[in-house]
Length: 405
Image (cartoon, rainbow, N blue to C red; front, side, top):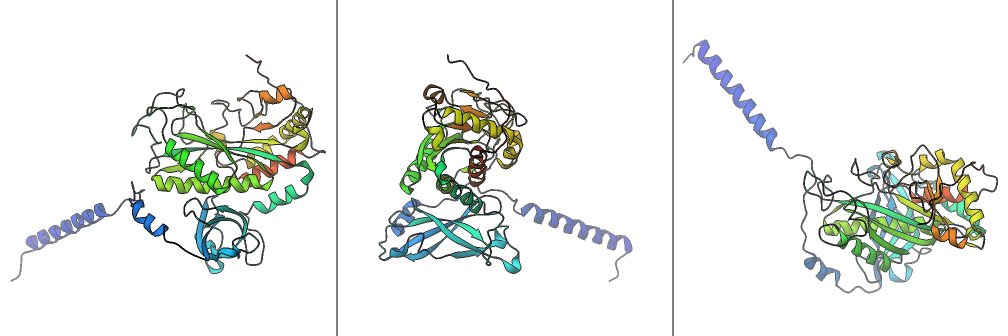
């Protein structure tokens, strides 16, 4: 039967409309790219496997830094009697999946540098901090550890000590809402949260406590922790640690923090200004001293080092982390990123001299400029090289001291 042209046109139009409707429905069913709210796994189920006895062998979790400054890892079995830095084998990974090598020549070599006890598997199992090389043996551009080791090995008589204050911020898995904050809103203003206690102001203490104990177990020189000024923000301190050990330990502590937050199904960020507005940012204040600074009358050496830091302010700022310009505004216990200053007990300065140094006439300085996401290899080595350079330029500057109350 031959249909009339109007009927055929009507049928074609209906078919097109059906196709468009079907396409719309198909598109609406496509999953959106977003974080899972939670991936539930019963730790009791895992525990029965983790309790199985193993003899003669251990698990070694190799850690390395990727192109974005995140710590990645994978595990291998090694003989228990060969679990030392000098006996552990080199290994490799796919650098094309970490932004560190092309796909047609993707192998990156990792070399063991330091060992820590594994707080997640327990027993004799270990975390192995490594650094990264090409197959030809050249350090990758992201491997800042090599230059730091060279800097410290050149002046062992200086005996550099560090205390690194790592701040971090906890978020729900949506990566939008800080832990404890109302969805789509804000908590009360800053004031009661710093070192506070109570369900209405202390958000994430279980993570801080778990991380603290895990670091102690691992052998990291973690020396303390506290809730910070912004709700959902915390800090821990690593040190005193000597030379390259300080940065090694901070990197491993960051990995442990990520693993602890994984267990608690909470997102952690080292962004230096995770929430804009009238909220504190996150830094990695770097406390530093040499043997001369710690000796009687060492304050003279401290102020000399500060003037050298001032003369190289721009170079240090450029190496102190990404996004620091959002944090160093001159507000919220920071100095402006464009200015250099120092003073006794003054947290609004670039460099703070503690009251104890004023009283004892010796001790250490605190560089308050490094951001929470800084590379501690770069920061510790740069502070060391600048402060101990006897021929280094010194900025003509006076302190902004606060009178003792």
